[in-house]
Length: 248
Image (cartoon, rainbow, N blue to C red; front, side, top):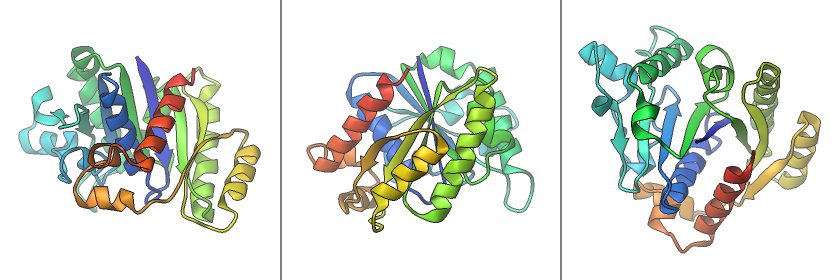
């Protein structure tokens, strides 16, 4: 079983990237599960017709006790989707909420029941503490990749995430696989991100170009891989998929 965590600053296009990776993996005939670890709980919406799915935390608040069927959705692309969710706004800690959701997933034996070939965790990386570090520190993921652009705050978050990964890596947990450049068409962006990767001590694994077809697909509530499977952008996502699956 391949276990991958994708981190990145909010708004960087991380969930878009992850959903297209999941759809691409499913199209290869593999069993893939996407676990959204963002309080906004919108990681999997483009796999589910643009609609948010019930979250683990929402179902726990509503029902007190839940079954796997309450929170596990299989999308039209064949991707198994789970959203951890977040606390009620203004009450509670988002990181603690993720820990609670992960504990419940273990209790429900989700991985043993689904037996996925690939698990992808989509994790908000603005703050790498508590629950947001769960995929790194608890042995859930084997490799961590960071989505970034050439924007300063995006690179700052990437640096913080990389430090956290390396810190936990000393304990035998997930290792840093590299950066994924999701282009914002900033001047000299590739050079900026390549330089940052060297400073971080890693490499840029792939450069995703900026393409309006991504927004066109999202307007349909779909991934590019599903909406425009023969497009150049879908090909980029498939190439990135193959690269990430090959990382040991």
